[in-house]
Length: 322
Image (cartoon, rainbow, N blue to C red; front, side, top):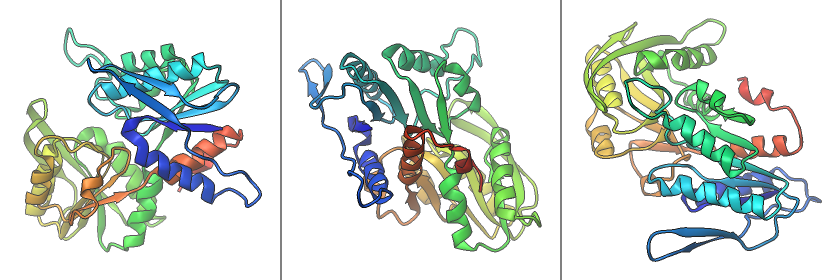
């Protein structure tokens, strides 16, 4: 096993290495982060180069494909370099799979970016992909290679349980998130189904702009956690939180896997009714370590466990039950 990282996910990769070594036996050789050198050129191009042999190795390359597109291109070039260096297998570990919102033709004459990204990864030589909370589950079908689809609920559900929140209810920020919200509510509510589900129905004026949100469900006196796969501009999330608060919620918090937090997202969150926002480290945000409203929960131990099990041909299905 050889583990390398591209530049966008260096901190995440170091946490993965730490988790892998913590779980290894005393007589086992520790895993190190491989030496991958990226040579930049004055015109903006760059060239990855493995500074150590990967011949015959199972190579894991960790990189979130967050904007700009350079991060996706860097991953593709690194996969290509590994294949040309005679790696036995190349596994792309993509904590955040960018372009995933472009998963269908929702209007005429548009690209399906998620399918194109999947084709590019396969063409570059990836033998397997590991990723977390795809924007749409069907994106797994865009690949003709195995995809390990990891869920952030593996860390969020135990974390929410540890908070011992009374009168808890789970909310979906839109109709598309109803399945995720119901899954969280079932896991947190136990056999007595004590955790309710609230659905927020939204209409959009245009992309990234929400016109109106209506809450469906029992809101009065509930401590509500809105669950979603990502926070981009935070427009939907903050408007939903404000609507729920106005309807009598005791408190409103949120948890989302990918904290994209573009534009004025942070300002909106701080000005909203949201009490706390929980995100993971699939997208690096070192500047938010001391933010009073935002708590970052690490997905690195989960990825480390899946990497180790896949490498050793062990079943990973137990990692998807709570």
